[in-house]
Length: 416
Image (cartoon, rainbow, N blue to C red; front, side, top):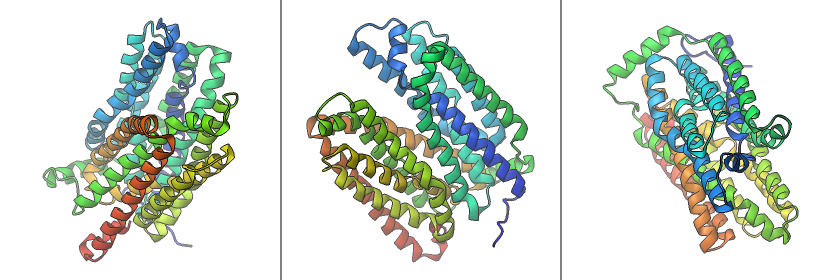
């Protein structure tokens, strides 16, 4: 059994404790951010919006506002984390979410709700901050596994949040649900402030390294890092181009509206469950054989699994294929983050991972637009085929890039 060498200034106990706090903290924050999905239209109606079309429109605006503002400020928070430390950034994000969730529960009109959803994106960022501190302090030979564990917590939050959002308002009421979520984030704030350990000498060394780099964040592998940023954006684009049309696609398969939402929910949950199941395992494999190999394989398998999804004839077939696709997608973001982290200057990890977060949010915004356009004007099946082509093209381009880089010894970091 081999032992890992801890990152400079971090003991085994320290980085493992940081991972545990970030795992549960990210889980709580994602649950809080996604539990409003089932009842958001109801809350919009309570705030005075009338008419089905207006309610749907304002619900979409309120939901998308968070992603828009988060994409704009993620690199800023990452840069500040590099300068002042990751722990302070996590405390700031936790405090911002406590305030934002409480104020959302006090909203009096739709404009306040949209403004506060923008504030959530501006003030939050706990999950992206968790990626930074875990990537920076975990030993290199365990980083993909640790990031996979963190991704499992985030995806579990995405899975459980909407489920709780469908139950809690019936017991507590919509406004009280936000206050309860704020209370749990407050507990996370306390845990982050008391349990996270970050060596201040490392923070000082990062600032010195960043200054010495003369503003250059990427250490000798600029094209590789840019490729990983593009792949992260494409991954979220591919996922979000399909999620919004699953309900309509499921209705075509069932032929009756009675159980459409149930089957659509199961199909969405199946993909999330698959990702939760595979994320840490694929991360462990990446630590052994190289993260780039896992990225290429996962992209290729995911792309190929989209082909039969375009031609299924029964709901259960789509559910099984979504689960299998979730298995293949689970290791992508952790591996992408691991590759980026190990190819940037120590003093710029937060800033570049902030760019990664922004690229993912860009994919989340553009994906539904493209999927809705293709599905509405060309056909539902062509959304799957379009996404298949994009994922396979990304797999091929990354394979070509990795092959050419492997022939240059100075770029050997591509493997992992």
